[in-house]
Image 1 (spheres, rainbow, N blue to C red):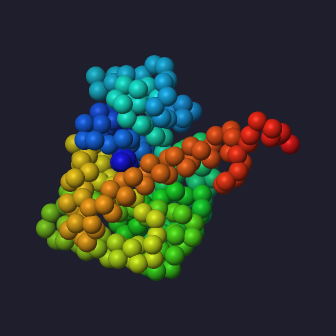
Image 2: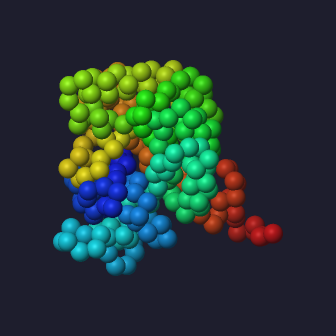
Length: 256
């Protein structure tokens, strides 16, 4: 299971702190949404890497090498980007800029036009926070998300961190979104949307929130595993052997 986090400078904690906390909580990996938190050139994953330690937690420069962090904390560290644009035109340009060098590309919704843009783009991995700004998510968008394999995020953060009426509304929004996504079998991911390692929650805690809005426990776990599925798929597509889905470059394949 993976969690998708915001790290410094976008969040309040370094990637190292997120990685250490997530590992203790039983996660297999973290997807780092913050654009400038990791160096995408190193690729991410568990396979070695030189340099890098928990320097950011000692008041020095934040660690930027995902491979070194993966080796140190025993948890996959994935380079991602979360695109928060004003309109679909700006979002499209940003997706084009980052798709080739980020393992996971997310688009922030919450606006009807951006929600529609995101689910209609096969280049987008996840539509995150689709109802945060009062945006609507309906059956048309759910069908498009399914057709384009765009995962819809269930953001449990407000339900975990808000109180009173805001928490009631957050639970209501999650319940409505769950019903639509479930009915149309759209792909989805689950996250606490943590901006600090202190906001990270173990899978069992997210299961409890999910059960409050009608998920069964396994459905929440599937939403956490889906981040890892996206990572595995995209790493395979970026490998030298990939030609197209179902086709790989073999020992007799010639370029050109």
